[in-house]
Length: 404
Image (cartoon, rainbow, N blue to C red):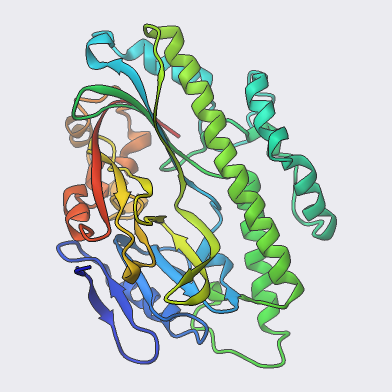
């Protein structure tokens, strides 16, 4: 397979292969990547996606393979964050001229923003069954029995809620004017608590090891295979990833219920995707068993479906993986930020935001300026940079966007 990557850093034992042609990579992000590559258990190389940008400890938009170790901060605190999408039998012609009521119905059905959300509108049986089917309650209690510092009270209160920041729910149309529902969310407050707790534990472990390691950034603290905390973290992060997937299922159930109240009867298509883009799992690449951390990256094995969303007002894509070995079978998870939230709020005017989202029924107030399209890299350039990682199956355009 032809490759489209370039080397951001090839000195030393761990190269950095980056699919970034035509898209900017900030100097701070490059330094973060070099810090990761300097760790002795990272490799055979680090793969960098075209949406790469500065993160905490590790860059967002990177794939970090490790041998016998895991870096909790590279996984992050929004463990299992990802995307879900489903195609319906509806077409654009069946949508009302005004989508205000549809957006309002979705906002009534799914609590948004941070917080516990109380007993949010009593979950339907189908949502409770998602929790029960995956034994989420007893599994989390077993984790808490060993780590009392992890709170469990948010699990039920946040299942089926969107969260804040860049999380969203969208109604989209594809190139054939078929209606899709697409959403972005993760493991909510419980996953955040788990991530934060184990990141701190990893920092504490650095000072206890007999064999010392130079860590260029305290956020790159790690657990080594064979340590008790390593196994505990794997158990906890696996739980959070399952919870995140269940949360997306629950949100999707609620969104579809909202659509059924406002739109003609419809069926669901077999075209459906539910994928993580902040997670770690054991995989085999190039004949070696590795722990692969995708922080803002999607699995793109040959034939595997994934979702690469653009920003508010930009195109999004349903993609099929090409199974590129050089990227550890991965692709980008979105467009990637080109400016921080603080910078976006200072640089983007409300007029610019309204013009950029004129074709979308969405919030057009100052509270979402940091999510405006100008805060992100151009999605067309991001897709061009990874043409050897995925092929586009469907191109989606938003008509309704509900932000967290």
